Length: 158
Length: 388
Image 1 (cartoon, one colour):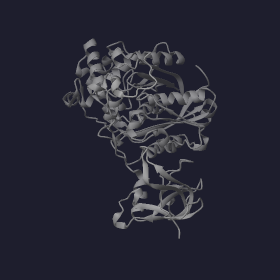
Image 2 (cartoon, each protein chain N blue to C red):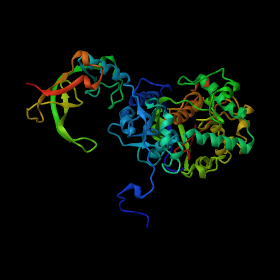
Image 3 (cartoon, rainbow over the protein chains, first blue to last red):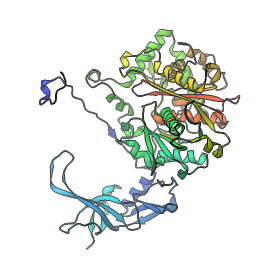
Image 4 (tube, rainbow over the protein chains, first blue to last red):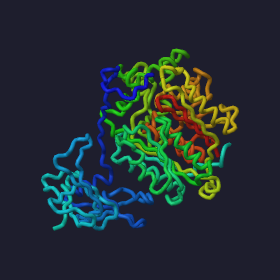
């Protein structure tokens, strides 16, 4: 019966090692070009669908609810303050290793937006709770490169 | 014909390009919204969505149909992924058909997207991982091997020349000159250009092969009572078929695509077609390689075995010939964003049968067309027959 419940050591059977090596180079897209440019300038933009009364963050080129185009008129600035809608403290990395410094991740509803934004939370010793008012903290202008990481983290308002 | 009558009532597509600025969801949105606009429908009139896309590795996002779904109008709707590799574009239309024919839905938006430019160093590299990890991959195989071996077997069996086969690339790239979405149209291309292009894996040369592309295509399908309200020119689905050959490509008949014949016979039976060579007025067979168009024409029973090249040599397959083949320009001319290319062929039939194909229009008011795609691990055939 060849079906083994468990092969404790791979050298006991024949095997061949192979890896899947592919690199992705992703364009940020029509809306993404402008959204990330905004982050580099220290601004968070959303696009608002007037028909569906819904504001997307990150800004999107189209409304997923009606497939309407979200053009020039749809762009509005949102945040940088907002409300913490959910949070977690992460203790384990994807490879199973324990993190020496747990990370906090939050879902934030930025003011004037409907969609939530996910990002790092840094609360120092402040207790986290849903409903907490928070704000985006940007890196210094010299450090910004037009990336999601131009927002360093969200922190509770003082 | 099984189930309720189903029609295609709208179609749209993006340009096919080497590298798009748009993200995958943005490409899907452009095609989907154009298809809806073409029949003056809105997303709230759509009951369900079929979203087709080939390997995740191209866009570089795992579970990419979920990633693409916002652009395809899937929000809040029953949505299914169509995926049979390169056969996906035609298969997604078949899925749209049975969603409606079954009585489950009245309207379906079918969207196919591919963004191959995300995949580095080259989309071809994604295919290095489709082979059996222990019995084939130790050789370092490349997908081109299969095509080169198959093309060689096909040429040898029937005594075809490289020149005979290169004429397909010339025809399709010239046909694409009238296509506003085309990536590799070339009205002046000659057989010599194809025969002098660089050798990739003998006998396959650069211009024997379709390009890698980014793009999306979409169609709107509707049940009869809706279709007649939406348009006075519905394009009816008359027959569909699909079939799978063995996964072991070394166990197939390399000179004949049996899986295409099986799919075609199902579609002809459903459409009540007894003499396909007389009853099919336009053919859009899958043409990622020039020899593959010939291969497929034979599998579709539209040419005798080894004789499809004669259709091209004699001009029968030209746009103004007795049986126009790939008047769109096909994958060789319009481009090959895998799943979107297959659905583009269905969209081409929609435009041709409605007389809306502009400078690509096949003369003589064609009434019935067939589109076919091919894929999975080179062993699936998908066929759809539409008519007015």
